[in-house]
Image 1: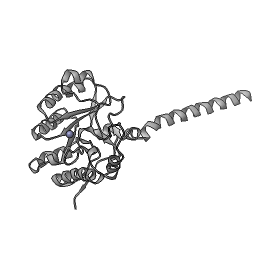
Image 2: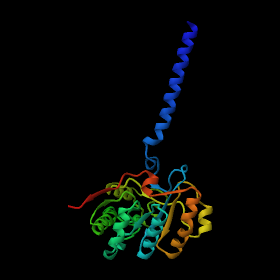
Image 3: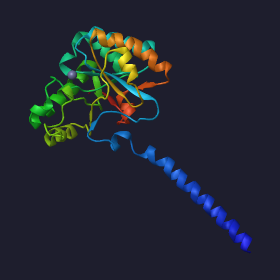
Image 4: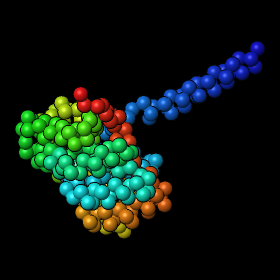
Length: 244
Ligand SMILES: [Zn+2]
């Protein structure tokens, strides 16, 4: 009898342990990374070997084209944050190809103004303007989910998130702003500071693309997995619907 009870107790303990470990495993998957982060996100998870390569402004279309070609050559996605005013009609074909690929396009606002200097209405106009311009050039709605504020500005001089700016972002559909935690266009310095979760900031300059020509194969050799900002931060899916 006592032996029977002992066996039952053992079975129960094993079941309990299994249930607890299952619950532990389930937890990380249930909350997207972005929801565990503050309003301004600077990096992704530090485990998993994932990094995100980003290019801001996109004011030189030739550099944009070169980075997109690099991303095709190595079969990796990158994230472009073009300022809305830099989206020119004559480049529509390239932007459509980028949008149709596994790369991501995020918002860098319409006019590249420092959002912390603007009132609520102007911030909303600048954010919504870039979405409207992208949709116009693509010919369909591509609902951007990543917003990078110009100059990385979203806090006041005391280092606090500006409530007006945060509210404007929320009302435009962005629960976070995306910053970066590595900005170095010198290959050996960039690689010496590399680790998982990095968001890498580049611009549409020759030196930046040259650095990436060395950095991308190095990342792949070292087992890093370049992903989009959306994937790294587990932001919502991009909604693409035809325009009416
Ligand atoms: Zn910028």
